Length: 295
Image 1: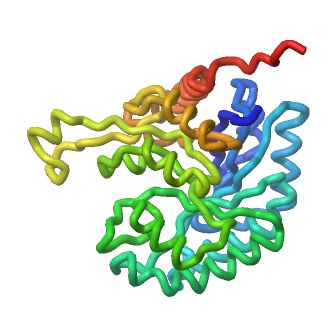
Image 2 (image 1 turned 45 degrees about the horizontal axis):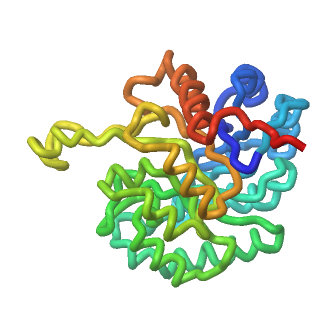
Image 3 (image 1 turned 180 degrees about the horizontal axis):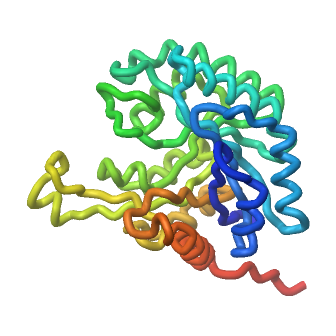
């Protein structure tokens, strides 16, 4: 399959192998194991073995590993995030992964431009470390409640920031972990981005958004009423048939891994219900079941 539909898997908590043995029979075709802020003492070779054992003989791939935190700052968790990036780069081959993804980090509380010197210092070294191992680095386009003037986590949430980032570090193995949701929450049309930025899209998250235009017209975007919800694919506004078609037309080959745990309806007891519905929806938007051509 040139484009797989999978899901993200938390590695900071619980028995990852047991979790996979429960969810993989639902038909996920890929997974993105990820960590939040630190590896939490994880033994990566052991974890890779447990994951591969849980996958067994299923046709499930791991194209991307995730490390989400702020590696540009100097707090204890920030340093743990940076160490986690290095460890994932060094151990990616054990998982079969070719991309490591996460946030760029940010100099907290300052405009995006003021993060660029530190960004160049940290990511220049990490990009070389990854390139030496044949790996790519992909930055998720999530603002984490930040904006251009201030923020705590990530500078890679705005296409103008992408221009600054890629001009600062033009390394070909630095790109994006893209999804439509994080552009829609800023009322940016995501589809034209695929056409422009496709060469830099290394991995795709399956997450959507519902924009409540009536709320915007009545209350604006800074009022007490939420004007947008992050959604599981199939329950939001995106036309995933168009998204997948544009990705394919642009030459994207890889996976769309569903990022759950955000939908205001399909959460808690309905979390996996929503994720499996998203799996089936994205498979249908991909064209349905893969049918081999006649010989």
